[in-house]
Image (tube, rainbow, N blue to C red; front, top):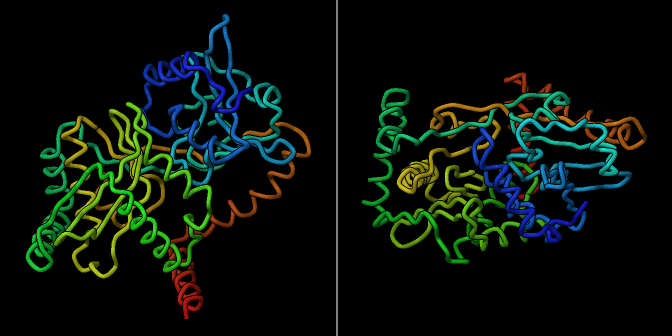
Length: 354
């Protein structure tokens, strides 16, 4: 059991090799660099290293709470979670938890190829993806067939933005720190405007994003993409990329330019740049949204739930998380109720601002 910073380079290389051999997409949230950065802002971060034949054969990054309640590394912001194991190695889950001194292991974006934890899943969700493996032109051709009105309208708005505001310019990997601060301000305002919890009001998340923005590893690179018009930023996105996957994470735009749909324009340019760079997939994350429905080409399952072993910690986990999870699921599965909940959140946000 190690802190992320205590992993040796040999162990990190084993980790990378295991991910390279996996049939799952090379999501950057599953790389040792992401766990390392989480460990620098979350002191309870740990990595369980599983050995077989004297060699590191598996890794379980996690965070340990009171009474051994465990959670996926970066739970609440990480969009892909689970253990990294040698092919064919499936330890006994409860024995592994006991060895880690964990009473439970909670997850909300568990990777589909996780025989260790999928049996403990309570819900299955869909993470929406954009397939650009055949190039951007092929993707745009798919949109012309599946969503012709969306594509035509979005491209027309991009041209109008250029005519009315000024030259439209896109930067896939922007290094200007001020642009990242602007994105976080937009995102915070969006959270408040829609009545949702402001993630960037939590210091550890702000620090995590700032550190990841400086991370430049082959399979985990912080990537800030910005759409400019007339020399000023109008939309931006921060995510992580590997050689083959761009994990979309924090998109936002300047509301004063909303009529131009700069966020949609931004995502089209991100898809184009990703395809040109050899990236085959954009992972838009779980959770229904109109822009995801317009952009996606498919989806993959992810799971929510918790593996537990008997004891007080597991009971506390069920008491603390299960009622809220079930309530969210009840609302989410009933469109009219979900729509009412969204309107209520926005109304409460307006009252707080007034």
